[in-house]
Length: 247
Ligand code: GLP
Image (cartoon, rainbow, N blue to C red; front, top):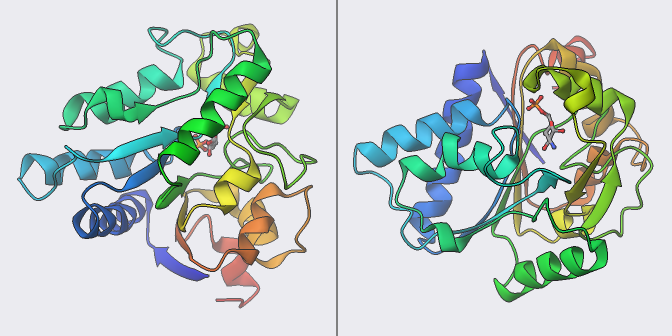
């Protein structure tokens, strides 16, 4: 595991975008595992900027997103499908048919999970998985307590996650209670992983994930067992780790 320290959100975004750019340049038809939330927005902005300068080409890139709220359709501004179009897909030359996000409107859970796992398999697996981290150590929507061996599944969101994500909705009652998420097994099968984190609120989760015991109560802690993980985080997110002289 390599930990790259950034001074703030902007530097984190730039370093993370550099790693993703390298992947795109080295393998123009790479399969990118993409994430949502506030953490990757700056990274996507930087990628768009380099695309506009002619440095990046997304025409052969394939993508699979980590998760989607259950019950939201792709045109809902709170959906992750909308987020991806708004923050990346509409601004680069990726082909929308090469992008994949769980279908939040599918009510047949087993059908949707099987469909999504099959997509990942048919693409030959994920080359680079981008991850944020929840305040409680979740990755994707794999909440504390979820079995490490899970693939795509339907998750009941914890109160902590509903509250943390309420800032994107006009009221907390509008936050969906369930989501489709790829599982820890899908994430761990990615050939490389890039986890980004910014801000003091993530400091405890980052310490537990990177230096605590490997346990399902901190889903991100499993990343300690992956052999190709890069962490790009700002000083605030690393503050507890720095304070304990661990890096
Ligand atoms: C959501 C997403 C995660 C994301 C997390 C942290 O729960 N499902 O993929 O990592 O939020 O979000 P943020 O980056 O906004 O802190």
